[in-house]
Image: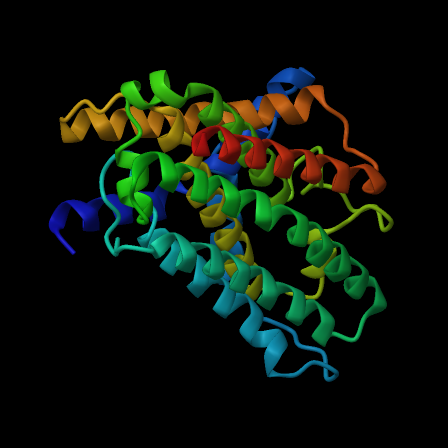
Length: 303
């Protein structure tokens, strides 16, 4: 791993908790209120890290391992994620498969930790999470395969670095469909409106939040930080796809990428401000629509 990759990775580790802050401030702006500080998640992580954790006697080592393994999985996925058009620190051919499996491992451990509590309430959320992810993963993978087909690379870094203005002129409609599908998947996988509401505590509508109700202290801090990193790595793929210009200058590439991540966070905040949460029965239809968009993009690139 070179010095540039190390600096970029450290920068991502420091900046990832900013994304939820930007989203919340955007939502506060639309609601006409001041809202929490942009750095609120940093304060929350620091406060939780100083607390102790309480464990139920009905739980096993699975409950304790859930947040740790989930955070470790998304950290490895971060090392496979390119920083804009710059290569990822651990890029290799076929790393897109490992990337998808790491995100799946993170979700699996969260679900298993929720089931380990023996609570029917958390089991309800785990069931919903597993069902919706079953619909979201194919759309995400089909989009990855379509981009790999267009760029001729099986590495995330090579795929996204080869998406240029010429690529957009050649297969622009297919890339638009992939970007739309990935945006829906990003909202679903990160518990955002219209699929889920990270701020809700309504028993009948919670999905992700209900699975982590029994976690506290450093464990909950690991969950919150892991969620911020997951939002970053999935957003990084979408932003890198939508930035067709390869400036060839490292600092320009970095500024364009960071600006794109900021605009993505603002866009998520706008979506959550102007849309209501869908009924649970409608969420599968939304995810199937994303899958249809990705499949159509695949057919376009195969022509």
